[in-house]
Length: 271
Ligand SMILES: Cc1ncc(COP(=O)(O)O)c(C=O)c1O
Image 1: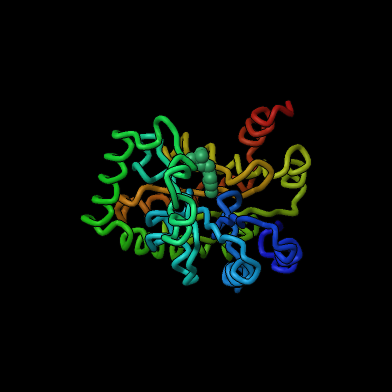
Image 2 (image 1 turned 90 degrees about the horizontal axis):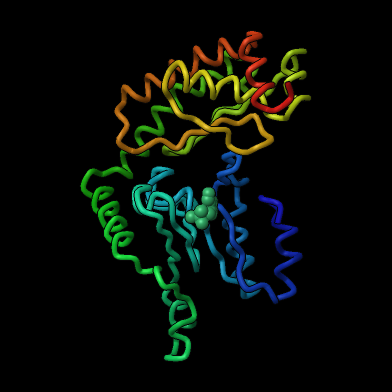
């Protein structure tokens, strides 16, 4: 389903043969926020047509957006929630499916159905211990609140870049899920775009890493969006350092020095 399109969603759901609708509350690819009313509307449509409403919190869960789960920002009550990634602080591969009691009782309602969902290594002890330790740390160190505070600071410091630089189209974020989007209409920018969509983003990602030792990533293959999902144990100074490294990197990238441009084209396999 196109993200944000309730009409298209209803057209599918109204057949009343759709078991589950899965949606990322904020899309990890591109860090796209939902249009106003979309998630609430999708949940209401799911209820209306008897479809389970599942929120994918693999990227957004456990404090990433400044609340325990991103769905809390819209007051949603999903039937299912997928979680993974930070569930073990990234140390042990682990994922989980959270479900409303009614769903759990409907799936595991009898002995024959006890094996409806299982796997040899699913309840792996090391993964479970790592998951519990992460939950303990979140609580003990108030890291969800910290994510919200750091995110506010990060956005305050970086949003002005959209006014300062013509190549910055948007700076957006919530908690410690943050992205900057580029757009340009100069000749050099258009040449890079023609070579590969979103290539300009590499002019920011590479120097941030090589010169400032900051690891960022493009938020999807064919888009000029750079994102960060930093750890919640950052200090305020780390956020300040990131903002100033970003400002100087964008300032230099927008002039598109030939050494950087050549590097980007080579990396993209164009030269
Ligand atoms: C939003 C989202 N959902 C699901 C997945 C898949 O998670 P896993 O690799 O743990 O299966 C990812 C992985 O990047 C993701 O970002």
